[in-house]
Image 1 (cartoon, rainbow, N blue to C red):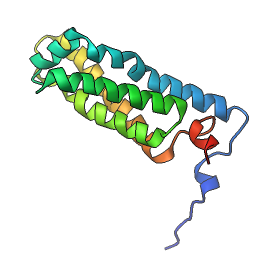
Image 2: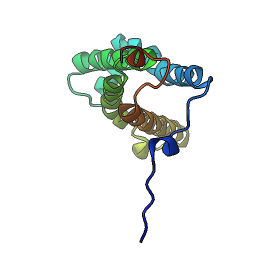
Image 3: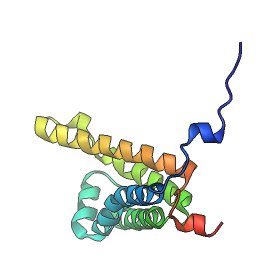
Length: 146
């Protein structure tokens, strides 16, 4: 039985003039939610909500998760230590995704909303895992330092 060998050039398209701006836009759009949501993790309301959801040490862990989201998002946006930043986002998402317990909600509208939030987090987790392996791509500080 013959096996095919896939070379790097076969598995990834060659860079075009648009690759840099498109990848930068992708990083911006991916990181934006973490950069916007991170500061909310310092608000009393967010900490109190997490406590009602059973988060232990919410007054410590919720602000810590905000720092993790901000650092990970900024790292990915700038493309500086993006693989590590993506692992921070993975850690963040593993911590916050279980709070969207759609399976235990009786109200159909709230159940659907929480399921959407849960699935959104899983999709972002997939994106973050890709970045942990592929890095920031062109137009990043990581490529400038090599």
